[in-house]
Image (cartoon, one colour):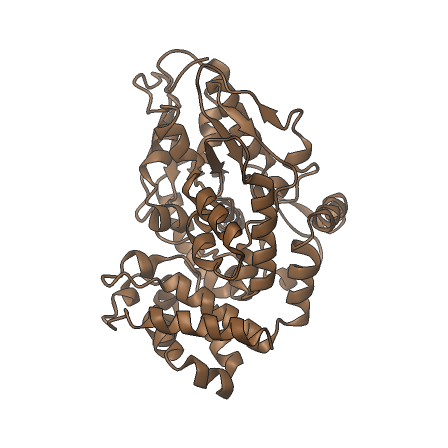
Amino acid sequence: MGDVKELLRLLSEIDDSLVSCMRCGMCQAVCPVYAETGLEAHVARGKIALLEGLSHEALKDPQAVMDRLDMCLLCGSCAAGCPSGVKVLDIFLKAKAFLAGYLGLPPAQKAILRGLLAHRKVFDSVMTVASKLQGLVTKPANEVIGSSCAVFGASLLGGRHFMPLADTAFHKTMAAKSLPAKNGQPTVAFFYGCMVDRMYPRIGQAVMKVLAHHGAGAFVPDAQVCCGIPALSAGDLQTFEKLVKENIAVFADQPFDVLITPCATCTSTIKKIWPEMCDGLPGATRAAVKELAAKTMDVNEFLVKNLGVAASATPSRDARTKVTVHDPCHLKKSLGVFAEPRAVIAANPGMEIVEMAAPDACCGCGGSFTLKHYDIAGRIGKRKRDDVVSTNASVVAAGCPACLLQISDMLSKSGDAVAVMHPVEIYAQTLDEARPGTGGNTP
């Protein structure tokens, strides 16, 4: 059992938050998991009803309560549409922290989170070795997407198609860890996130290319660590707080104007979840967390609002590439960012945006949800795949590496020849032919 005072503090905060739920059931209509299972227990209202007796249920059957909470993508669809403004994600994350503190973490999960994720050098070493050995057990699956699948034991992975680890991590590809600002442009701190670093270094390189093009300054420290959401999703408040403190030590008091990330989940976590979940940290750290959160922006939003990137006024007269846009839950529902990625894509005069049927419908990833409940995640993802393919677009774009991973899996398994890209990658493609009218400022 964790620290009793900490558990009681969490329980008190959960109780205070629960009273705002009016049981209207609006969350039922927007919950992707409920749409697949039809079970009231899987929708926010059902979980909140269970949590009202959390102290009693924790004594009666705490694992059952945790299992119920795990049936949540943490997509925020319920919170975004809640007429009472219930902070559903905060409630669920605090309840998970309470239960994990009471139960303790499963041994395998504890080893991964506290033995690997919480130690940057160990994490880097393991990922580097894994990238060298992955070719022994994987093979290419889809040339357009660049995905792989298992050579042996595919059933153990649920038949997943996945993006291979990069040969070289993004942070090791940079010649310089900083760029000086030019012509009065802002300086940014670049939080690239674990998936960009290890699976999508091309996205990090696109961001650096765009920043250099616009003359923006950049501070890109190697010592940054995971934003902590994998740990928090498992209820591991100890690892989450450790990672937050390490990131604060790296970024706080540095001379930058904005902290940007190309990952919707990292952005949402730093900007909204850090301040809500850091009450157990010292006062000075809490103050630094809130200051950093206030300076955090999605990279698409930064390009549009701070650097003036806009849709091209002179679309190409040649055949244009059709691209459809998926709105990550943590970008649109959590942060209200959805017009900016489209503006960044449309800055490329060779791109034509064609909207899919439900661009803001969850892709089904949900971080660890897809690891624990791949069947449901796959059914949700199949809908997204069908919506993408129905547009006849040759590219699908999304501002979240986790969504890119899930969509790649769905498209690759279906044999679809649809490239999966980040909006910044599409914009970066314009810069080799930068000229007036391509959007934004030319250097």
